[in-house]
Length: 122
Image 1 (spheres, rainbow, N blue to C red):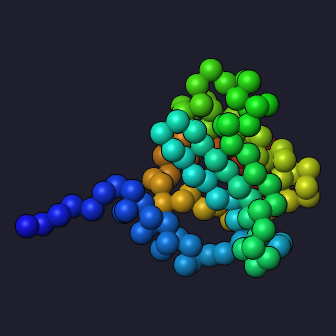
Image 2: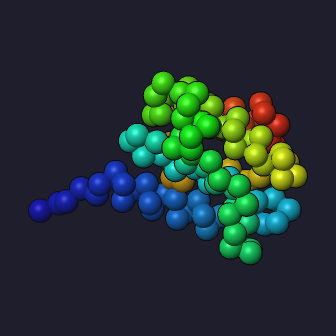
């Protein structure tokens, strides 16, 4: 009997392939994105030091107050601008984008485009 892998298992395998290709450094940290069914999370990580430099999610009070829904494309775009502004305040201009194994469309693309418009380079 052939068993089919779940979507989450396939996503994790894709994410590991992506993570083997690049890593965040102090000069160019990694912008890691994760989305669940109800929320989105974004972190800027220095993998060499093993530290999260900046983090934001749709669960943050200041972000959530501006949103009607936390799981749509508009929420992703808002999160992209918030994470970019926080990064620029810390002096981070360039990042490596880690889509977390998710397809680069919809919410992930909206977050990336909003972060680029807000001033992050990747």
